[in-house]
Image (cartoon, rainbow, N blue to C red; front, top):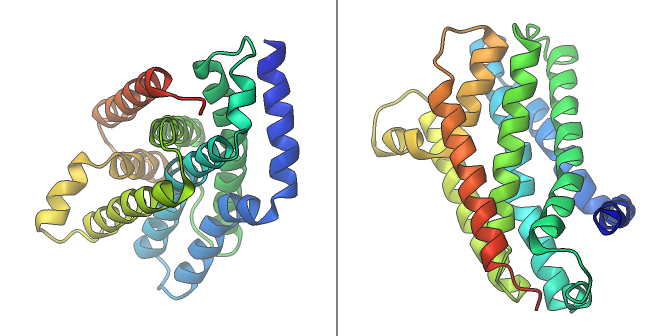
Length: 236
């Protein structure tokens, strides 16, 4: 466990020096929520936009920042040094994910505060449910990020893959959120980000919604991605 917490402390120090990555994970979703929200009339549209930006935080870290960081370390040979230590791939991935989760939770809190204070959105009906839903989504996308970055050796490849995955998921999420029928609307039922938004929406607005299918999707994504990442992970 000493090696685990040593990695966590080291990554926290490195993250504190990387202001670009820090700002992208923590402040970008809140900035987008404000920019888009201030251009919308008060009401359901603003709330829907804030909920979507709340879901973007876990997506940005899990699909883009986390796997890119893993591949960058591998490409520079930094992971090879850890191969001779007692730490297992699973513990290393969990240590990295924990640091990211702290930043994602901070970013979600910033979105929440600014949406309520600046955009004057109503207070969430179920604070506890909202927090649990957001945490479940953050864990699920962190696990997906671990899988995406488990084997790829160069940053150019992971950049392309991350952008494609994030872009495709964001397009389906935005399209399915419009309420219009069509192929993208139907695909939204299979996209984890859409299930995260539904959970956040149900708890923020106090809607009557069967949360278990969406929680099951996020749990399945977590277990499959993290288990596969631990088996596929390479140090070099």
